[in-house]
Figure 1 (tube, rainbow, N blue to C red):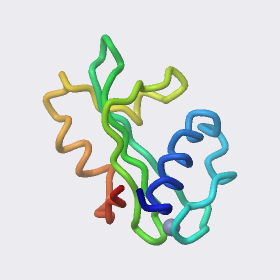
Figure 2 (tube, rainbow, N blue to C red):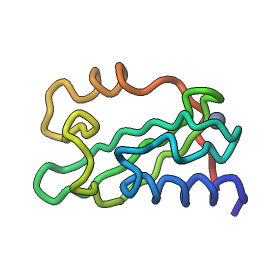
Figure 3 (cartoon, protein in one colour):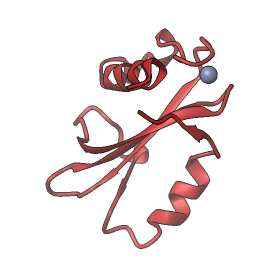
Figure 4 (cartoon, rainbow, N blue to C red):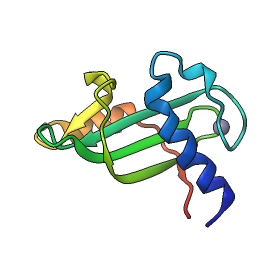
Length: 101
Ligand SMILES: [Zn+2]
């Protein structure tokens, strides 16, 4: 597994702990404190996926089968039952290069 991918996965795992203080986290690719994220998933089970990216270097990861933490605000989650989910995601998520294992 590539080290940069591992770093992104580790950083993404920290995001729930830094949800109100994201600028304390640095991008694993470029070092800037400009990370952003979006979760998507099932409203009941809160199982879904997470998109985590850097707005500076436009790199990030897509992590599947994760639990959407309760601390994540509703405007950062797109539920599978939302009929406008894909449009919302397109508005919120910029083009970014997905790091791979
Ligand atoms: Zn970056």
